[in-house]
Amino acid sequence: MIADPARRGQALAEFYRTVAPRLFRDLEESGALPAGTDSAASERAREEWECFALYACVRALVAAGGFNRETGAAIEALHESALGAPGALTSERAPRPSERRARVAERYAEYGAIGQEGGAAGAATVTRRLGEAAARHMAAPERAHESLAEIAGTLHEQLVEGATEAVRIAE
Image 1 (tube, helix red, strand yellow):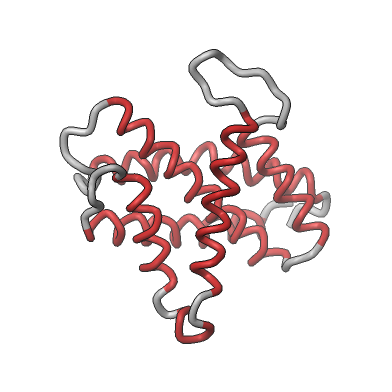
Image 2: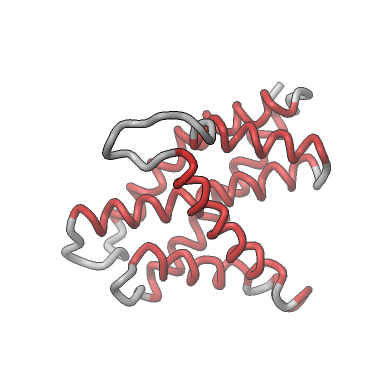
């Protein structure tokens, strides 16, 4: 594992930028997203996937390094690298980093609460419940199909596993 927490977070951001778009394409190609989505709906689904994929990366950093100050620093570096510095300027059409961070923080709070629900018994269903929550956001305002929840949850867990391994083997 990379000893420097900032570099660890930056390395995981590189992994995220490579893998998350591919997984979103898989999600689009699955046909599970609402049919006939316009460009605004497609962009909204992509933004929601960004939150869900970044949450997977945070889970991976915690799984690989524990929950401590170093992991906190790695998470902040991940966010800065993936989302931009809080005060950074962006193009007119792109959301400001502070807006993206606010959306991500809101989703993290929701996903974190889901992860905490039900104790040991809830652990058996956490992938499904996380997938359902992400699917609701990706499909909004349409109703999410059960297949979207299942695929999103599965891709999320695969991303957690892959990112955890990537963090553990990186030097």
